Image (tube, one colour):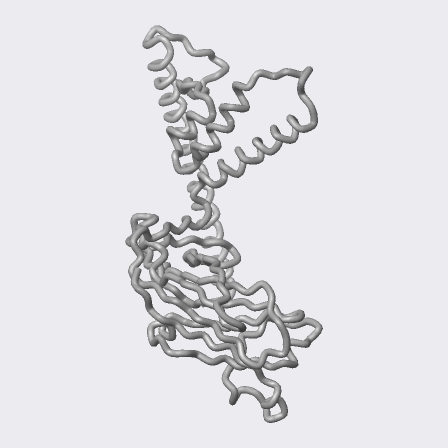
Amino acid sequence: MKPEGMMYAAVALSATLSLGVLVAFFWSERRWRQWDREQAQRLRNLRTDHIGGENASPRQDDELAWPPIPFQRRPFHEALAEDCPELAPSPQARAIAQYLATRPANPETENDEMRWNEATATAAVMVGMLSGCHFGPPKPRLNPHPQERYEITMTIEDAPGPFTDIGGFVQYDVDNYEECMPEKWTFVRGHYHDQLDEFIPFAYTQIAENVYRTRITVDALRNVDYHGLGECRWGLTAVTSNLRGKNVDFIPRLHLDELRKQQAKRIYFSTRTYFAEKGYPDSGGERSEFGPEVQDELFTITLTPRRISP
């Protein structure tokens, strides 16, 4: 094809495309105006149905006005309880709020103490409202009939000094939290499930010099279906004792399998850690984990579990 023919063909194609664009534009504009008229007529019909029937004459300057929507005025707490019960305040919070609303004001006898009490009660209402919401993890429930209990005897040997604040806590976790807890999503974490845990403290009783004893329960928490996804199964993760040395906490620990073996567990600690000016809590270890230069500077804490009847 000659250059002149190619140029004429390009001009003809460009003109055809431009004409097609114009036709499409006017056709779309026509369809849009038709749709707009249809919607306006539908709104007028709705308004006529809601205001006076067929003889009604809606305002000429308000063709697109929506029909009035009936609503019922209710106190906020009642509307919240009826429409969104999971966000309603707890009964304790409602009782405190009712007391504050009905208590007669007496400016003559009001003093700083009364204002402080009122502020405290108001704070309790807010805390109660938040506690009634299901934003946070569910509260664990105690097992009324536990079956697996242990007595733990702790013996301290060759310690370089005394210990204070001797106690501990039992850690419980839900093993199947990905199954029994609803999935959540945030920009930071993405998709996740709440991991449920609970820490129950316990105290030691001294029965001899450097010998202490306590009792713990493995099945202290009850398995509960919190969200209709199946029961959350609580299990004991660790029994952690805590002894305060000079400046460092020593935390010997027993796990569930070690409890059930009912064998003494001897844990070694360094006296250098005991006299350290500051440091992180020390969980100790086996003798082989310490270097030869400190083998003569170790003391031990032995934990001996024994299963007892419920």
